[in-house]
Image (cartoon, rainbow, N blue to C red; front, side, top):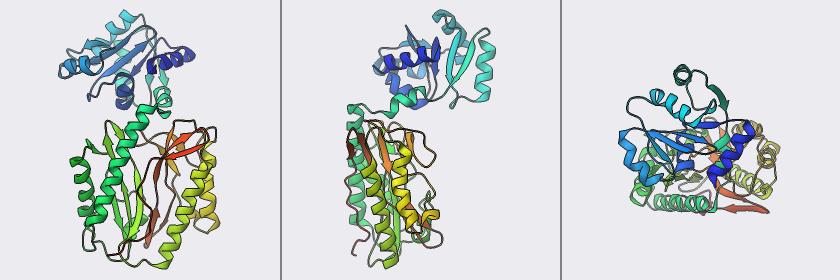
Length: 354
């Protein structure tokens, strides 16, 4: 089905074949999880080219694909592959191919027209099939469990790095193949950095802590953020936290199939702006999650995406006050025809007693 839909796109683009080099796209179409390989997809043939390290793996993971064995380099194998397929007009993933790679391939394939293509496979990946939703659900469930574990062990005096390791080690020992990104545990003023990294800063009682975590289960990512404090919270922080939560709830209420993603972003952004914090919400509301932790669609003031049933989306408004603290609350949801299904189940509260 995935190859059928891609082939329909090739016809619409006037292409005879498409060369796939992006790792997640390669896995999505073939099932191949190796770190090196190229797919050649035409109307009639599906070829996976890789080297000796992965010959047997291709047979196990991508039995529907012809194996093309790379003995030296891919650029030396490519001319014969294209000639055997009768390809003279070839699409390539322009967002994932270097200038040097393209020059090498062009020199090796005289007479072939190389056509830059953008987002053909990513558009297919954006709408999740139900087995993909189930994989996301498993990844999210483990993230929920890892956060619950952290709440059992985190105490003032622990460093951000120690807290991050508690999360990562729990994930890895309970079924995750890896974390989905560098985990964020950002306490106090570090929380005002939207993409802070866990440091050796010691967590203090009563200060806000932004905790942004995710893992990979069965190839699919998760992404969740909670902001908490340990002990008695400052009233100003609680007011900001409650505003961010209202913004998230407004955005989720706006989500359904057919809605432009920019409108969903605006539902949250307008609330934050009306409260006087508009300049402190400087990133988009959310993004798709799947084989990659950041993929289509995007919900932001610049987004041109229209939500479709089956799309995944993070909903993560935030307010960041330099030198003071930050607040972000993030759930992973699935767009449905008449609303939204929230996969994230971790409770939301601004503070935990110690």
